[in-house]
Image (cartoon, rainbow, N blue to C red; front, side, top):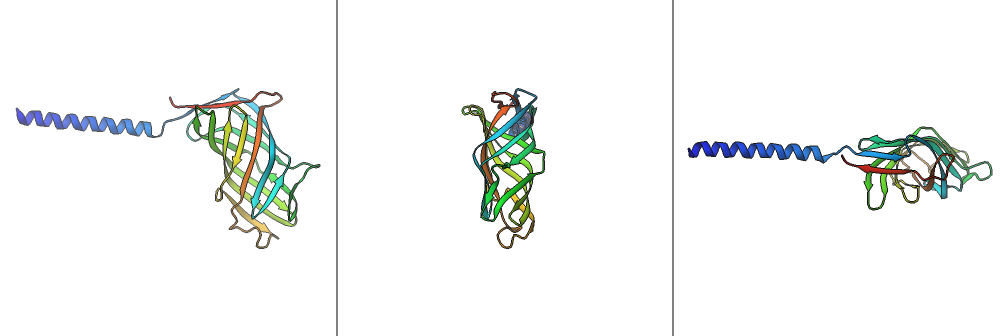
Length: 210
């Protein structure tokens, strides 16, 4: 009888452990539901303050804008918006640097990727992905690619791009000397006010785990 009870207890413990492991595995990487409102919809974004691309030297834009589409989705990470146009500078306000005026041509689409959501602040943390841009500063030309860390705040509608060194890389530098090389680690920083296209409505992004 004692032998039977011991076997039964061992089996019960094994079953409980298996159940706990299964539950832990299932909850370790929950699939996030991202509710974008409105969805699906077009958006437009305009810079708030200067936009700065630094590749050894700062290249500053006083004018920048973007547009694209946004939609609810599921996953983690998940693409909640596509940036289909991205402009830096304008004819009356070119981007500048110590090397001369800067022309930056974005190769789109870029992605707005959501990773985490703070319900108490209404802030989504993620990054701008699939970034590619061809840059010309004076006679120096090069390509920047990679991703850039970013946050989006529902209350203000501000997409804040704040990349860190190592997220973006340089390729194909020409006539840049030692100023911009393939070892340069560029950064992209600046804020954009996002609105539903053609309106003053601020879109929202909310993440939840089912």
